[in-house]
Every structure is written in C-alpha cells, then in structure tokens.
Amino acid sequence: MGLVAKIKPSKKRKFGKGVAVCRRCGTSVGVIRKYKLYMCRRCINEVAPLMGFKVYS
Ligand SMILES: [Zn+2]
Image (cartoon, rainbow, N blue to C red; front, side, top):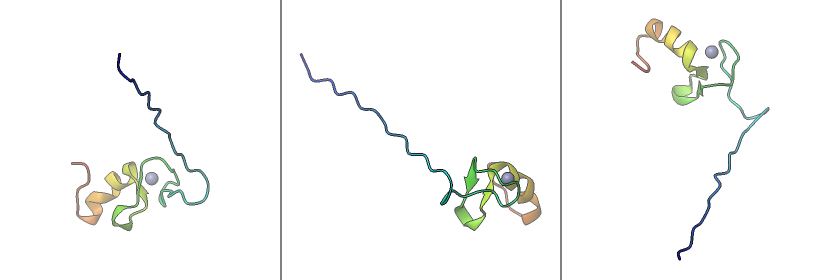
C-alpha cells in the first residue's frame, strides 16, 4: 500500500482590472504582453508582416 496524493491544480483566473486586452480588437483571449505589444495572437499575426517580423511562423 502506498500513499496516493491527489493534487488538484488550482486555476487562477483574473477578470476585470489587471487583465491585458488587445488594443486592436479588445479581446482578452490570447493577449500577448511580450514586447509590450498588448495584442492578441490573431491581431499580431495580421500586424506582424506590416511591422516586419514574424510571430508563430
Ligand atoms: Zn486582437
């Protein structure tokens, strides 16, 4: 007999203040704060070619 530890991962979700939102379309899903972009992946993929770099190529 052994000890079985059940670990429940606690999900922390933030809503409201403190959540980065896409400054282009306003969504809070998949927003990347990296590089101070504050844009969602979708918008970044649209804008990236214009800015001269590739994201998620
Ligand atoms: Zn967006």
